[in-house]
Image (cartoon, rainbow, N blue to C red; front, side):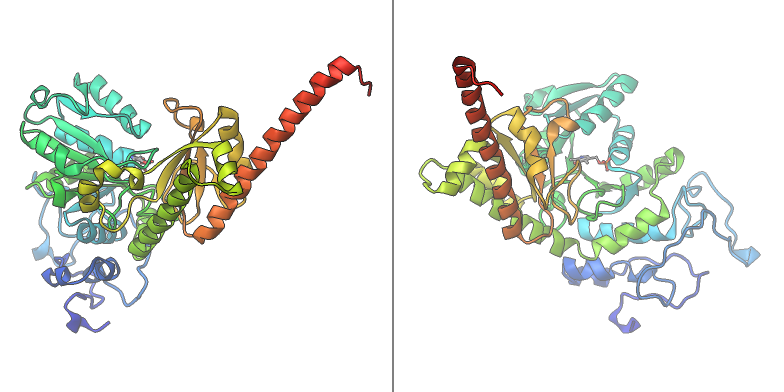
Length: 435
Ligand SMILES: *Cc1c(COP(=O)(O)O)cnc(C)c1O
């Protein structure tokens, strides 16, 4: 690549000091940054990033250039030393994330590892949180057990919070895909000297910018949209607060909850296409939700709508939060999250629907190119037994609609068949039909 574009610093010199991200990057769109924000870290001629697997890296050849470890520098050398501190492939991933999240970013072995690391670093006495991803509650139960911290409802009175406490805001929410106002909770936290931590897993870059609305720390399960191919575990923390990333990085080097090289490499590969993936997934989810909510509306009279209504009771998604559109359009101007929830009319229907679908895998997790549906009771003990979570992938949305419709129809016919059988059996009892 031509170095005159100002973002390539490569000459293949592996002894060069770690270069700084060029400031010229900011003139580019997010789509361009996703392809080029790590060019300055490219030390080889390869166009595609190489996969580095080394755990340990040679020190400088020149004895005069050797800087012995100090208390401050031990984990934060400009050069790679040992992969529990930093490694080339994950550093490239972090360069991309720093540019896409608009804040210095660190990666972790998983989303929950990132979350736990944030709480170890912040050590809040009180955390305000609502129901959402059950794993976050498991992390907080651990945090409370270790530190004596307590949980408060998300909508506790502001006076219940004090300096250093945390409002934990997941938006959009797992598993319903409904959104909460980042601006509102940022103002509430800051009015008390508390911090707003946003779990933005369901609203990745391209759909939502929590720092623009007041977030102090943004966390992502990179396992979902950032990875996007159901093949890597990853967690991300980003923050603009002075000194926090340095503090977090030092603690991460001690805890050792870093990503592996393969996952870092997969992450770089994946972020190149993040924006097109999530925008397309978001648009498809919006269309499916509009179709379903239209069919559920009492005034829609068609044979198809009748079948949908016989099977589905409710659909939940941010696009249906009509009363919240004033702040929601500001918060998610490019479309809502690609996950929504369906409540079917009975637990049995919810248990059976996944088995009737050809294009949706019945599996947990979300954010990949493959559409997934999960009878949520399989992994979350706290949800209603009729709830299904849908993660829309990159298949054609009309195909997904047809697949869901065929599934609803199969369930509807099965139910009618069972009713008939029951009736037949009752009549059979009375009539004494043998056989
Ligand atoms: C999946 C998920 C997490 C946890 O991420 P892992 O990478 O599985 O550890 C955290 N928050 C939300 C909203 C999630 O969906």
